[in-house]
Amino acid sequence: MIEPNSPKNLKPQQYERLRAEAAAPYRGLRQFIYIGVGTSGFIGAFVFFFQLLARRDIEQALPNFAIQLGVIGLMVLLWKWENRNNK
Image (tube, rainbow, N blue to C red; front, side, top):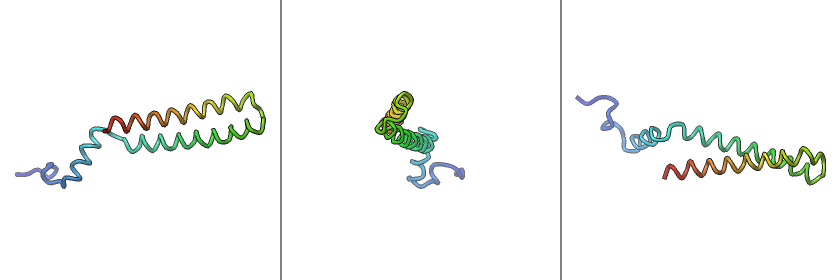
């Protein structure tokens, strides 16, 4: 008797999708977080860049701008690392 959840009862595409999810759980959620945090960093960098350009509160805007660039760089690095491990 064949079990209802046996791989033999699944379409090949469904089986491969399930194997990929088992190999890298929550990959879609992680990528969503990378995009969200990276976008937030980009918006922050945009704001602090124009504060620096206007020469307003440079003592605080410069470190904050650097932090935002670091956040963007970290998210790009994590995104590339995630995609490199999947290939």
